[in-house]
Image (cartoon, rainbow, N blue to C red):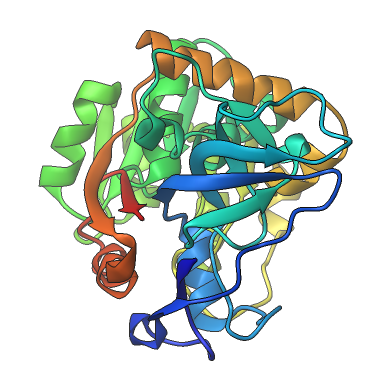
Amino acid sequence: MKAAVYYETGAPSVFRYEDVPDPTPGPDEMLVRTEAISIEGGDTLNRLGGDLVSVPHIVGYQSAGTVLSVGANVTNFAVGDRVVSTGMSGSHAELRAVHPMVSWKIPDDLATDVAACVPVAYGTAHDCLFEFGRLGAGETALIHAGAGGVGVAAIQMAKRAGARVIATASSAERLERLREFGLDDGIDYMKNDFVAQVRSLTAGRGADVIVDSVGGSNLQRSLLALAYRGRCLTFGNAGREAKALLDTSTLVTSNQSLTGYFLGAELLTGPRAHAMIASLLEDVASGELRVAIDRTFALESAEEAHAYIESRKAFGRVVLIP
């Protein structure tokens, strides 16, 4: 099969489009012909400096396609099913061996490329807001990186839940585009101090729930934008800052909390998260939630696609097509 691979981590230029051996699924796995690949934020971070679990390495968390074969122990999927699957690596390829525990059937009315963008971004957004953030109607949510995949998802879900939605993005134009997804107030973080802006927009109170995918100094400042008993959820490191100590002393006097989140852990600990993502796929299929796909690239152009994401020009998701 063809795959976008690399032999060392680094800039997008490390990608090579090569022939590699087809994956060999085990008895608990399925072989899927890849038809669409959603490039996740973690994919770019892993390419930049993640572990090389194989050489050459095929990066990528999430892809969708058609089941070509099922292992002897697989009972809930069949050859010909359209599925979207996640995994720690392997999405940037024409074929992929996947496990049913991290796979979902694609609803009949949902396009494969759209489905490819749902589990990681929409599952992360939903859990951060509700399972761990406990966001309720009438509360205020601050969504960082609002124009990213998780951001677009979180804005819609928070608005649907009856919350006031504030988001940050890198330009007024990107913020304006987010209004159709439910944004109430936007903050251009390139020009404004988001802590001061959140305080001003909430009459000094702050945000009840903050979803922070940026990390680093941005996360430190997020803690200063929390309301009394506010909850801050952190995942990823979109800001790509070196790891630093975090001062959590400000949380104590206002009974605030900081929670780290990783969707993969939830999927491995029971059926709840799997069912939640299945429900979100149905919501997207019905039009209750929307997916924003900015651009599609051929798999052989993975270098160009990753570079486009890192230019911070993308709105929503970027998709590779084998």
